[in-house]
Picture 1 (cartoon, protein in one colour):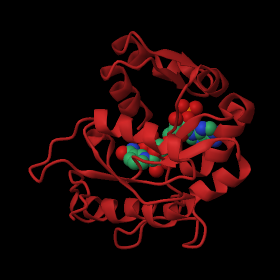
Picture 2: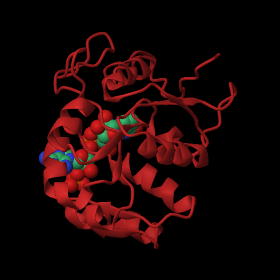
Picture 3: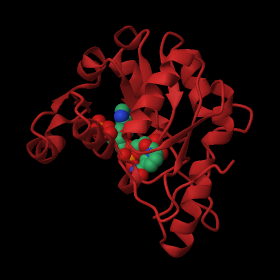
Length: 202
Ligand SMILES: NC(=O)c1ccc[n+]([C@@H]2O[C@H](COP(=O)([O-])OP(=O)(O)OC[C@H]3O[C@@H](n4cnc5c(N)ncnc54)[C@H](OP(=O)(O)O)[C@@H]3O)[C@@H](O)[C@H]2O)c1
């Protein structure tokens, strides 16, 4: 996921630094994407004007602590994570460790109150994240977050990445946006069909 988005930012002319616990495992990716830097989470957080959180959902807090709250303070951070539990899906339906009254992003926003989180990119597969082409036209990414300016910045990125943006409001809307990942994955688990995206018709 991080590789797909990192490649997208490079394609659109942005500077990129990938943060990881194990820089060596990104050596091949770094060779193919010569302009990208590779470092630890804190290096990437310091480097970023805009952060992207693309780690295993249950590790998000740990990764943000490693990145350092001070290094991300005041910065927009795209939260692409999903709170997927370790338990196996039931009839293709993933299990979440959050509830419908408290999303992953709200938890992160509460602990890292100076970070301007924007939920985005969580409910599409990594193969379709950057300038996707679907017969049904441009797909929609649902976003939310408490900071309007941060959402405008992320909408600009989504525009570059070939997406329509539907702003669903404040952080609480992540309670509805995160489960779209469950819906998106069902055809994959049931029929091995992973090539689709959502579109909001109005
Ligand atoms: N794959 C997709 O198509 C897709 C689509 C939409 C949303 N997402 C979301 O994007 C996130 C990443 O998904 P993924 O598919 O790339 O695989 P993943 O296995 O969910 O996450 C892999 C990443 O998590 C990091 N990580 C794992 N445990 C960690 C820990 N204890 N502390 C810090 N970092 C840790 C790894 O960092 P290291 O590099 O240090 O190992 C690696 O970068 C997930 O939340 C997923 O729900 C994925």
